Structures are given as C-alpha cells and as structure tokens.
Image (cartoon, rainbow, N blue to C red; front, side):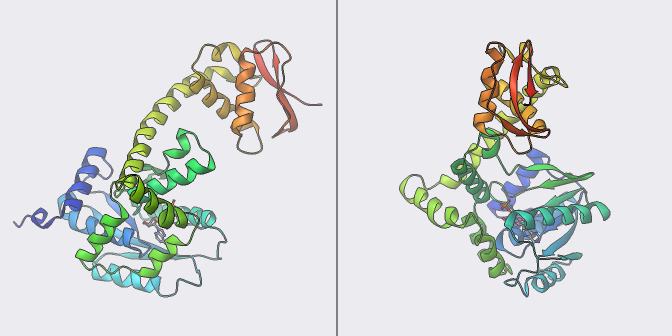
Length: 328
Ligand SMILES: Nc1ncnc2c1ncn2[C@@H]1O[C@H](COP(=O)(O)OP(=O)(O)OP(=O)(O)O)[C@@H](O)[C@H]1O
C-alpha cells in the first residue's frame, strides 16, 4: 500500500504531530471543517484531507454566509471546493446582517456548533493560526488584560454539548500558510482573506507586527504565540487553585475574609473577580477588584466606592469576617 506521508511537507508533519501530542482529534473522529474560503481555512482543509488516511476521519465542510455585501460568490466558491475535495458541504445563511465583528462571530459559532451536534460531528475545526494568536495577544494587551486575556485562542474547548472546537493550525504563521497555499495552488478566495483583514485587528496585522518583526524580532509572531501558550498553562493552574478557595470563600452572605487572608495576591484577585462577576451588572474593572481585595485585611466598616450591582447601586463593606453589600 502506498504511504501518503511520503508526500507530506514539514507543515503536514508538524500538524500531524500536534494533533497527536495534544490529542485534538482522535482516530476515526467525525470532523466538521469551518471553511471561510480564505487562505487559513483552505490550508486547514488541504491538510486535513491529506492526513485523513492516517487518522481515518470522516470530514465535511461548513460555510457561513453572513450576507455581507462584499461577499457575493464566496459561498458558491466554497461549495465548489468541497465538491473538488469530494466532501459533504453545508451552507448556513444568516437571517439578518450582523453589524459588528463580535456579533457575527457569536452567530457563526452558534450555528456551526448546532450543525455539528445535529449531524453527529465530535469536533468543529477552524483555521486560526499562530499569527491570529499573536494579534489577539497584542490587541488585548493594549486594551488592558491580565494573563487570562492574553492567552486567548486555545487549542481546544467545548463548543456545545458533545462538540469541541479545535484549532489544529495554532503553530503555523500566516506567512507559512501563504507559501503552502501557493505551493499547492490551492483555491483561495482572496476576498475572504481580505474580509478577515478589514476588522479591528487589521492595523496590528499590517502595521504593528511588520514593524516589530523588522525592528525587534523577525520571529515575533511565533514568539508571541508561544507566550500565549505558556500563559495558558499558568492560567489553568491558577484558576484551579482559585476555584478551591472560591468554593469556601464565596457564600450568600458575601465573601469570607478569613478564607482569603494569607493567600497569594494572584489568587485573592481571582476569587474576588469571580465573586464580582456574579454580583455586578457589568464585568468588574481592575480598580473594583483591587478595592475589594484591600478590604480583606481592612478594619471594620471599611467600604469601597459605589458599584452598579445586580441589586442596584451598592458598596462592598467589611462586617466581621465578611465583605458584604450595603445599599443606602
Ligand atoms: N464565514 C465563515 N464560514 C465558516 N467558517 C468561518 C467563516 N469565517 C471564519 N471562519 C472560521 O474561523 C476561522 C477564523 O476566521 P476569522 O479570523 O475571520 O474569524 P474569527 O472567529 O472572528 O477570528 P478571531 O477570533 O481571530 O477574530 C477561519 O479560519 C475559519 O475556520
């Protein structure tokens, strides 16, 4: 029998190893590929198709039509590509045009997750890359984020019951992927790639990263992606520690100070953030978290400034062993 892996490029081999090492997709899995038509997801499609005989996967393609005026033709193109690759294809068309990038993404993940579950796919695979990871890290860094915000774009996570979202290309940079697509003359729909660029992070991609690469480190994208990877493991560990403390510290009365005293500041902040997330109408700010953290060792009746909570405007106040909410 012919060994297909003889024709593999270094990228094929790397993705194959990552899949195995991280157990992203098991042998024989049913995998739905999210294909936008741009270079990243077309590269994902080619790689998965080539690796398929080794893994014995069942593959299919899904494309979401957002009905953006700039998009005509992409859905038909992706459908044609699916036919060329001999794979089943599903097209999901939006009922209405979403206004923001975030709303469009939320809709996309929802409908793709539903489709995967209904059709019995255990995984939905996307073409996110190391470059996406580096951009997300820089973008969140400049907007202000802790380790949690910087380690965005994980290799895999649950999407809906019985379906995981997996990102097999997270070590590949966009430059590598472009070269791969050119080498195999893959049918990339350029507009789809450009559409991916028009949103908020376009300037990071086109101005900041090239500048950093030229003046500081040519490997900046891979290095930042690795930073995200390291932070991911740190965050997982801290979250697990914080969850244990939160179980004992958070109660209907409020926050139990004796359980938090003596814990490292990193864990105190995490537990307080978790508490505030359930109590406040909006995501807590760094200043709000720190105000409550300083109340852990503060004298009786110390109070924070007023915050918009789920019960109206209130402040956090020290009362014996507790930090509780008080209103006028
Ligand atoms: N219209 C679409 N139909 C199917 N899959 C899509 C579509 N748009 C994006 N995807 C999938 O999502 C991946 C990432 O694309 P893109 O960066 O545009 O989306 P995103 O989810 O908004 O990413 P980010 O979270 O990095 O902003 C693509 O490689 C593809 O797998």
